[in-house]
Image (tube, rainbow, N blue to C red; front, side, top):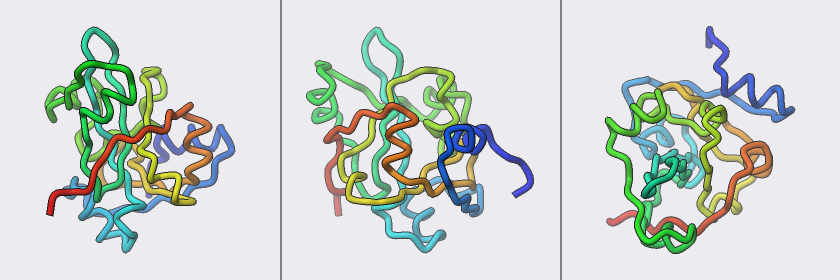
Length: 160
């Protein structure tokens, strides 16, 4: 990998070990990314942009094989209603392409970052590095610590 990304610099600054994994940047489906990386789908996390009324968006990380449950997330965060940002809105809000949205690349925005509780069952997970085609394998405990992540119950099984 030629260029070091801000997400990698942030991890290094905070003393967090990581492994970079690259794949074809045309792939933006997290389950497909897991397949390409040869990783179990429950270890590859997608970062979703969720809008709340009258406030900053929040970033919600869930496993590639899980489905975001907005009602459950709203209850967990004390909101009446939350909305998924459209792909266009997510890209405008973050300045990153869908498939490359990463909490590690957005620390300067100071948005709330939430992670789905099943992440606690993993020692390491893959998250986007902030650019399509690059994921970083990081220790879950370190990710939670350096991003001040709130653990929530925010997902359900993917519909079959």
